[in-house]
Image (cartoon, rainbow, N blue to C red; front, side):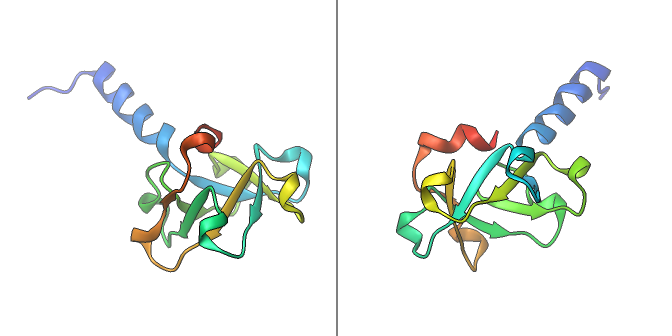
Length: 111
């Protein structure tokens, strides 16, 4: 079976476009998305699980891998102090299978 270069490009682009490698920036104006961490799971737009390895964070379903450098990230986020400043409210979960969207209305923010 022969893999054409065009197929390979689409395949690699597809993987990259859905990955969730995140970098936390120091200043609000550097961020793609402003995030607030809520106290309770039911208040969140997205339940997030922190992955241990970058290759595990492959979809826009709340599985994030935090990278060390901004140029490695697909999305740059800034953690705001107040809920009303946020574009997205998140809740960190303990287990991978708990991650996901509570509401689809803000899902496009992380694409």
